[in-house]
Length: 439
Image 1 (cartoon, rainbow, N blue to C red):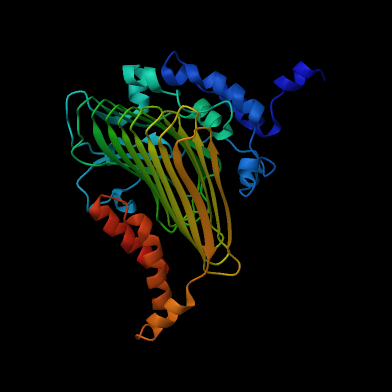
Image 2 (image 1 turned 30 degrees about the vertical axis):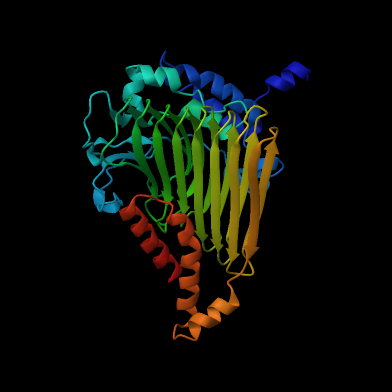
């Protein structure tokens, strides 16, 4: 085989998907024109293995032992609202997607402002909406991220949120992704959020799995464009008890004077990988990444965060905490990159983990790459067990061992949840954490 033939060969783990691609209609729309180049990139990359440095501790290739297929939209039987957590304690806009496709009957939009769009990609892709044409697939890295390329090739729908300049969305936007029971394959779901100058929006995304059997692997890509002087708060929640396998790629670009915060809460999940990359491209901007993973059984959560400081006078914060019980595994890989011109950068990173079992595992890799002189940057990681002195103190005051441990663990985790500014959501998450720790 020649060198050219080797370079053009389809990776074995991509062959099943390549065979399926011909069934897709490749239209002259933003999503349509992106498909074929993305498939070609995926054919070269294939599914990553533990030999890839970024996947060293997460054996996602094991999920593809049998030939996997794209099943987006499969088994779209009726899902009753009573089966879902639609966050009834919040007055909010709601978008629901079942197996990757929009469920209109379960969705409800209450904020109506001229130019504001809270809807689904498939609809506005067909209309070739200007904001979609100008921003879709511009942040996603199809050439290096295999699952991003796979998503771009096969995704059919997802959330599309466009906030015009100077519009403050009055109520949160809740996006619920539902995976039904007994499916085998990959569900690809896409999302795009574009915010104009001086706009404000809060997004709460929940991933929910119906049934107790093993479900499909969900592969999501979400691109968020934060305009100049705009503010976006984004929450990603996995809190139900059912098994979930999920790979998420979050790509953010910030303009000048902007504020972006993301809160990633994992209280459940069989295998979860959260990739988060932000490009801070405008001066005087701030980015915050806050994560909590509290795990039991053999669950695994892998958080990868990359913050690119490309301009001066910006600030970023990373705080991730883990509570690992039984045979669970937590992985954190945080990277701060400061360009030579990005003077006056403040960037801080912290990962703290409590091991509640001798069989639990944690892997952490904080990284700094700094090419500027006038900066304040730090990173740190700590791993330990519950403080025995604090445990003794609580037990001496009448609490039993289980109650004492739960109280200490909740106090440890509350440091992350307290960063959430939506008070009803913050209180609900503390309740969910308390229920989990007291089981």
